[in-house]
Length: 213
Image (cartoon, rainbow, N blue to C red; front, side, top):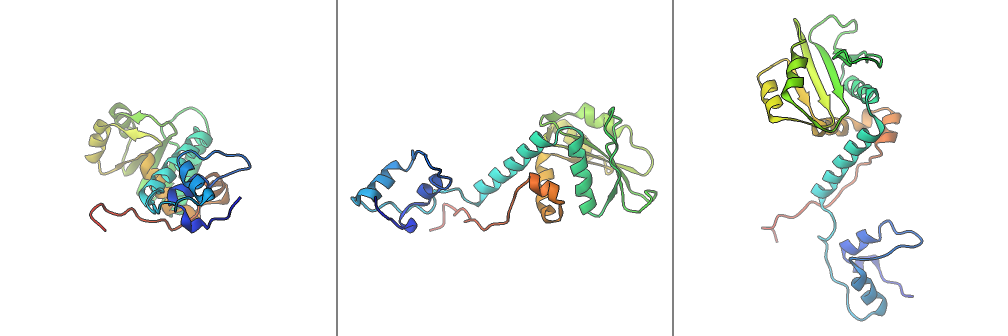
């Protein structure tokens, strides 16, 4: 009907048609597209209408958690954590699936696993809140020069975090922390995990502070 350069549309309008298929509906920017087709009024310039860097980062983090929760229930998540620890220069031996023995992954620095620190890792694939009783019970199994690491896709209660803060050989990693580590080491991950978490590095506009012109 008419050709209009992309640069003449607001960023919000461009985002709305970004995944357009053979049949689609424009809702939020309908008036802008109709005006452009009719040539009756110049479309508004709205460079800030689309998501900024913070919004895209929040979406990405939510995407990673969702993929892990859907595709790596139970023991497969422990396999991913073991693989991640290996990329962090630890040696691991993921325990076979079976009854919960409180240790999913023994991790250590030396080849034989004798030199301290020896880290015993427990992984929980649930997205709920892990409380103090569970963390305390895990820590109660620590002996000698062992360290304990508890990884969950969910969160920890304030009581659980308070308990862990006083223990130098106990570390809690929640879903947000796990995403941080995965993004940091993403380029080193095996293709099977890159295929699960399809990500690519891009440049996005930073959100402007309200005090800036």
